[in-house]
Image (tube, rainbow, N blue to C red; front, side):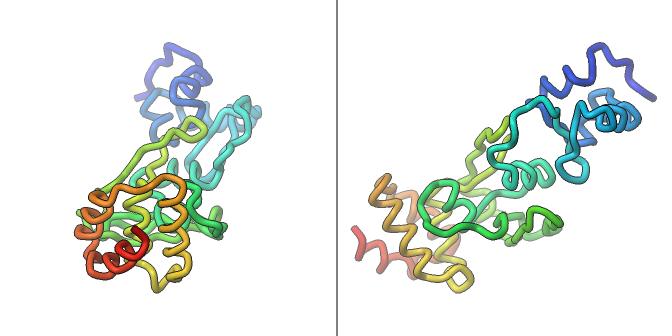
Length: 201
């Protein structure tokens, strides 16, 4: 049964920050036919499969993070992608690194490229922050949790990247040692991290 729209489809989009998943659009009363008509008239654009955005909005400042987050709401930006977002690396991510719960399906997109990492439930849940980027909610691990994850995945991203991030974060922001050690315990890298933390403090 089609819902009777009490407001224009464009208004529904604006109420949701200008972008909608198709499922959310349908639940809000916009039919597939209306959605495709809006796209064909140039009112909205399809930014990836199942995600539509008003063309009147300014260009996305963070297109890769926004696209991945809208397409995969449970994905949390992590590792080098999170380091870059927190400005504590000189690395330029070549893919969006995300964490997902170990029992979920790994996200995959043609563009932007996505590197998915499966985390245990406790490690996945710890340290998530939600940032509003270009009107879209994007989950990103906080700097301390990101540093701990980098230690855990040090063989994949390189110890030089991890140590650079640790030094940059300390120099620019200082860090919460209690938080670092708590996340290190959750991620089971406390023994690995302690000597580096003692050397840098």
